[in-house]
Length: 419
Image (cartoon, rainbow, N blue to C red; front, side):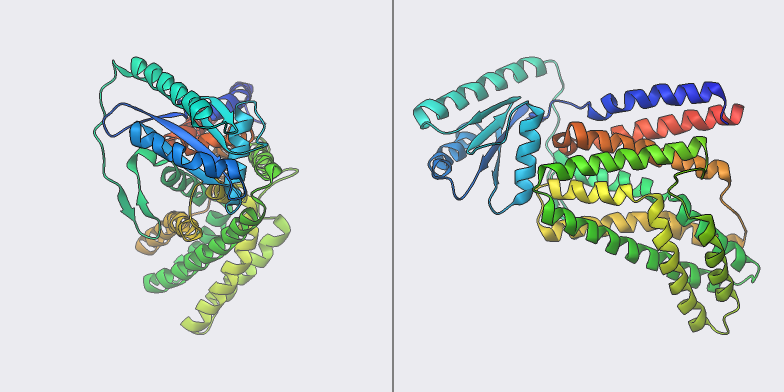
């Protein structure tokens, strides 16, 4: 049992997580190249809608006459993920995504088109009023210099002012990489190999294990991505992903209090002897090719169990990818980047062991803290998907969620050590 003071602290913090995850800056305004507020105008339309066709030239003319408007024209009939985005944004405003054309900006929603003299004039007036309010509140703030787009391999050009998805990729992949199940198997394998005192062999076998782990994780996440691309237009999909993320997070936090007791997302005790047997098979292999083949089989078997530990992260991340305005190629590029980040800590462990020929196991306390860290982050992400999925695109949200999770884990580690 954990000390009462620590238990009370965690209970209080977790009650606040939903509100923390849902907080963010104004989603309708961003800083423009001139340092002034830039109004975000979302125009949802369909190829099958004649009113959308009539409205299109007038809506596209708005940012030409008002450079401080950033237009997001989102077609629904060919892009099911845009349907999901429309539904989420309408729901956040207490509205229903029942018709198009629809214009959403500055916390308000306008549906239908009665001509430029009526609807167009009203929208322009409301945009001007929104801009005036924002400018009045920004006069005391320092201007931010403009930055040029950055070209990222596989992903393409990324606007530095909209770094939320790259930031989420970095944060979620880094947190996911600290997978207690993956650490358990890899540390056991390397500890056994340390007795052979062969650095080159340890690097090869450890590298093969890490590479196979990364490839399997990529395949697993690609499967999730395809599921969401097929069914992502359904309103309940995001809610289901959020609810499952909260459940996974709660189970991991439970493991901090009652490690691997009851419902748990860890390698089952009954499966550990099989992992030990496969590891010993690597050590007694007659030559290096045989060792590599045995390592591949171990990595495949172990990763099916490791996926249990942090299955929530791949699910949430791939759902976020389908909510973003990305091409299929860009989504797979982000998946590749995620998995490269995921294997970095595992590769670092191999390098350290090969350099020191040391032996180390993951302690129960360390495993519990890793579970707490991932659990808190999963509950935050689940709450975000349930309550405000449209805020995922806001700059800084990823680092804010990570800061909360790391802060809670740090305090828990300090209190648990003191007691």
